[in-house]
Length: 609
Image (cartoon, rainbow, N blue to C red):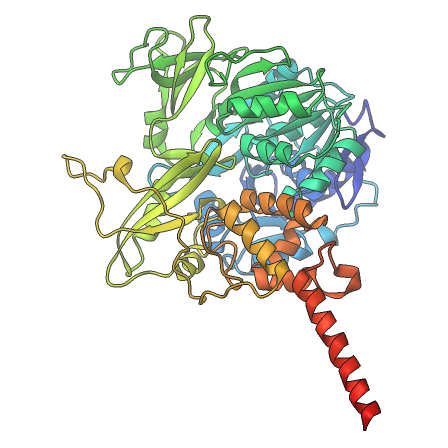
């Protein structure tokens, strides 16, 4: 692609645009810096960079140097990244100046490549190392059924084959422009990057959390994005935030995966996006290197059953549904999804027993294996697959695969907690929440204290939205926790360290109303932290949208994070003429009138004297 299109735009982020030639030059500089420190042997190299052009260049640099890509997410607790470093035995981290302070909190004795110290403008030749198709390309970590993250290993051959499947299925071409909303530490991000850059197209890294929904709309329009790809929940919140007669004339494809897609998502697509745009629902996991099946929908497609199918198997992939004995089930019967292919992941890093359990030899073809996904589904009579969820306790929350066993394991380490059970609730269609049910050892536990402690170990997407205190866990006749009998979360304000404080101004009253509606709480205090009340990144996006409607003002996620309670946010929104929103509280106007009357009376009294 570099030889074919040296001056075509490869990556465009908010910091810098890179042509294919300049992206290759930067990757070469980083690759040579890696090789100078670690030589030519195949080993893991960790990357600690933000979402943007630099991390894309670093991924290609690691492959150019014959190494294995291991992403570290700077938004995660140090304990989780230290576990990944220990497990992969990586001794080198590629980072930048902004990441140095975080890297200093990780293990000691690690070597660093600071990309900000490299002279990217200097000419440099391609690295002469050659990696075979069977060389390991990456180790990506997901939550594991044992309660610990597990690393999924994949080689270059299978990664390239998946890119070919994506290219053929979605007709990706040199003229396409792909928005990169997914993390580069997950298979979805890798899939989008390779789908774009191995076809001469352009990818646009964008962080909704930092930039906000309104800027995402502008990005799609101004950059003439042709392919949108995200988790279903992100699409849902984005589509619901659109106002007026916004049209996306260049958008030709919307692709959703990682979470169930609902009928109302299809209705949002039909209502908000042009007729030439195709809607694609896909199913895949890290172990299958991406999608195994897809279902294409246009404005004329009718979803009769109320459930949106995940479609038909892609090329070189066979999908089977198995019962508890490993036998294939009949059409319309429910079974576990098993994937037969020669292009599955190699297995789990340093977990041979788990690999043997989940990746089975194919007795009919020695070149193929069968992966047991743990998902359940049924086939329609026409062979179309309908996904019915997870077989075990793993679930997808906001596009992330979450293992509740790991959350329970962390909660069990607290002395103040006697018992803990975690479930993923879907009290409103399409909105999944992690809810932790706790039996306290002695007295009530503050949700504020729990969040502060859990944040040291768990990533944000695994943090329970709600903590529900119960006197005892409901049990099944076999003595196990009866998760189906756990009570529905109430609308009461959670136990916080912060005392309740009511609104003092009309602006605060408006913010309290919005927060209460979005968080499904009857009472919200003006000093309460948004995340302590059960808020998350998607609910934050809802708050932003409602603030825009109520105040005619765009409030970014960064501003929301900076002012995480109503009192602070109201103070910021009402501060100064430049910062004042289009909202005039009756109380403020009354105060001004009272001040003016007081001045008039004072002046009149002086005149009488």
